[in-house]
Every structure is written in structure tokens, then in C-alpha cells.
Figure 1 (spheres, rainbow, N blue to C red):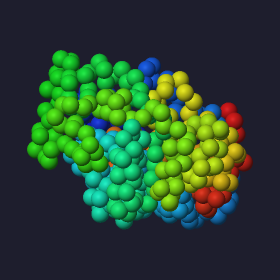
Figure 2: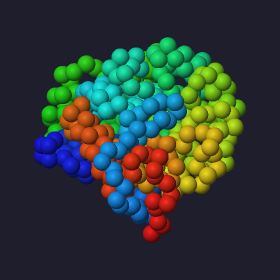
Figure 3: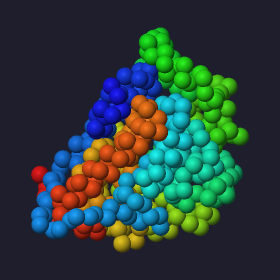
Length: 381
């Protein structure tokens, strides 16, 4: 399958599956427990249908948005995700360059495989730093100071991952960092030698944001142990409030899913929240960001920028979320599969397809700009 033959999320997923060893594909594709929430993330968009208007003279459309003070040329951005150089040797470099080309925001994770500073040099667009709250308060302060020095515009604290989710696909294959593969997992790597050659002929795998704090390569700490041993399950609203004040700029909480928590976030000075269940990778059976969107926008949408992610595969999904009041929509697997399949050209093709879908769908909806979208465009199924 060639990149030019990819026309949708599902095509990119198939192409990635054909190229990646099974354990790495399952790491991207998998979720927690029975993966119920993972499936609901996409199916939740089917709970309502779009109502188009016609004869609106939409020769041109403006799909730009402003979210947390950042101007984006399109209402989607590349959510921060971990370990990207496992999927393709370009990793975050490819995502940063593609996001910059399309004028949108991208994120680098605490578990990113390219440094904040290098990613900042690649793209002139707005950059998010997604980080986790550690038991070591000094480490948290150091991470924020480093982000500020690197010119990061938005701090994004993930609050739904104080411990790792039960990702059974990874357990079956033995996927971990460092690798501790089962026999079946090793066989999967053996039948995809191109990935191993690619991995071994490029620079060694690192986690630059944690280099001074976590020894991943030496085998002393795996990713799963990082979540269970280094992150602080005692994280509280008081802790977050102190971080918001220390940062003194755009500060976003990722993983908020209740109206009560959204109100708390606004009360302590956060400027944004991402309604997210971590792609279904944490608490299986939990609700979806799309299902909670209307209630949370009604509660705090006039005080804080409300964003959502999870299961977004089409431009119509984006328009439905924006119609309910989301300021922007995060993409995860939508760009990770094309990254794995083809590196930067893959991410660029995925973003181009999404941009084209949003533009076409806005014209079919009779909308000149994102501001024309409202709940009057939706009907419950």
C-alpha cells in the first residue's frame, strides 16, 4: 500500500499495521481492559447528525480559531503523545514540521523522544508541553522552568494518569521500554525486519525531557514503573493551583471529564481544559469527551477554553464538536498511524486530508467560518 492510496484514518491504520511489528502497532492501537471506551470515543459522534444549510454563498471559508491565546489556521492540533520515535525514526521532528507547515499547534510529551528545544526550533507554530506530576516536586519545577526557557506557549498537565491503565495487549506481547518481549512478541519483530533496521541505523532512543531523572536505557525503570513509582497519586487541586500561579501563563488540564472538575479548573486560573479519556487507555468504561462537551461548555465555556479529544477520525467529527462549543479538537492516533507508516510525509498527508474535509464539510454546511457553527446545526439521533 502506498501513501497516495491513503484517503482516511482507516487507510493509514492499515498501512501502519503492515509496517510495524505487532507489539508496537498494538501499543498505538490498544487501550485499557476491554477497550470499550476506546470504541465509544468514535461511536459517540454518531449520537447526533449535522443539519446543513444551503444557498449561503460559501465560496471561501475561514477555518482558523484562537485557543488559549494561540491562533491556529485550522481547528485541530496534534496532541502530545509519548515515544514517537518508536513508531518512526523522525518521531516528534516529523510532527513538529508538519504542524508548522499547516499552521497549527502540536505538543511534546514528558515521554517525548525529541527535546522541547529541538522541537521548538523546527516549528514556528504554537507548542504545548504535556507533563505529568511527579512525587519529586523539584523535578516538576525544573520541567516548567525548562519549558519556559524553551519558549513553550502552553503548559498542559495530564491529570488522568496518576497511575498507568491496564493495557492488556502490551502485557500479552511484553511490550515495554526497555523491551521485555514474550516469545510471540519477538516473532512479531522478526517478521518485520525493516522496522528493526530503521530503528538500529538511526540515533539511539532517548527521552530527553527525563534524561537527568530516569534511566530508561539501563533497564532500571520501565515505562510502566515510571507511572506507578514516579508519578504522584496524591496530586490535588492545591498542587495544580500552585503550578498555575508559578507558570503565570496559558495553563491547561488534560483529562478533565466532569462539570465539577471543569469548574475547579476555571476557579484556580486554568485557561484551558481538554476533555479526554486518554484515548481509552486509562479507565475503561468511562464517558467520552464528546458526550460531556455540551454540559461542560454550558458550565464554564464563558470562563475557560474547552477542548476535546478522543476518537476523532473525520472532519464531520470536528464540526460536531465545534458546534457543541469546543474551541479546538485534538488528534492522536489520527496522526500517529500516518507517522508510523511514512514519517513526515504521512503526517502531512493526514493533516491535508483533515483540512480538506473540514473545508469541504463547512461549505456543505453553509458555514463561512467556525463562528457560524452552533447547536442549531445538530440534531440528536
